[in-house]
Image (cartoon, rainbow, N blue to C red; front, side, top):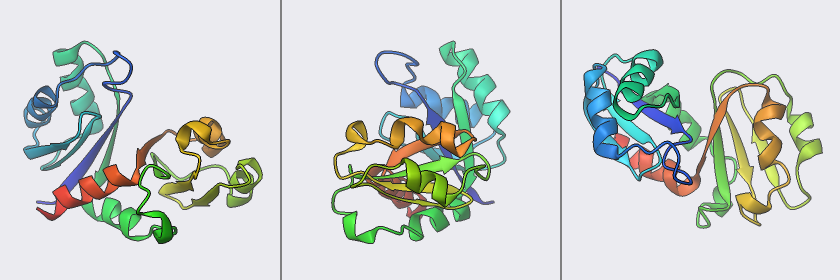
Length: 172
């Protein structure tokens, strides 16, 4: 049975969408997941089993009263995104490097993102992810606030520290 990575969007941020990680683990198990492990309180988990995004959304809504956006990735897909980091020179500054996990292939091109980025930013678009190096952090990024609209598909961002943490959970 293969492992999966769960990325929730917009939970435990600014007092909205409160979801304790114990509740998230219980929701994963109720939806059919096995041995769920969570990383920090922003909706990152790994587990084994056959679970659908819809089943997880239903379980979370029943337990917490809201329906978050759910993204599930096969462990191998997550590992490939982690391994393919085009900016290994900045992994020591984990808050300046971000990965936007795409729900489906983007409608934009690399040229579109290059034209929209700030002068100090670097970006690389793949069919599964957008890698964004923002030396002035995400809050100082020219591209980050427009990234999902430009990509034309749903995405959820994680900083490199979180990507590394999830990868470590997969390796356990």
